[in-house]
Length: 128
Image 1 (tube, rainbow, N blue to C red):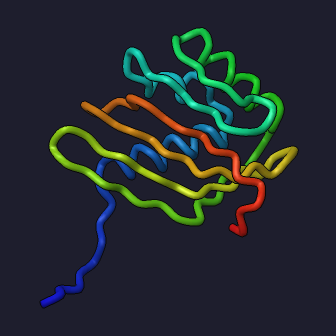
Image 2 (cartoon, rainbow, N blue to C red):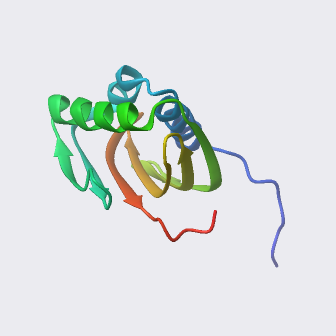
């Protein structure tokens, strides 16, 4: 028997939505304060393609992105959370519209309330 019910956002999804809003605002301090020690950002595609780890490199890459984009708006086309007692993963399809529109498949892994790993997959062919 299948039971239908209302889906509720969990804490990781709420953190991910706040993070997306911080990115849209260009708040590099808020963006980087969410990281756990040892986090790596895997930026796949676009001019910032590469892997970034360490506080200085993470601040640098987000500073470059927010400066290049200027004022922007984020639109979440889809978002989903999977969680268990060890952590949670949030995947989101997001369009960041500033000087350019950057469409991404965004994957965020949370452990102990901090962002432990993330993938920023630039997806220019996305239809959202």
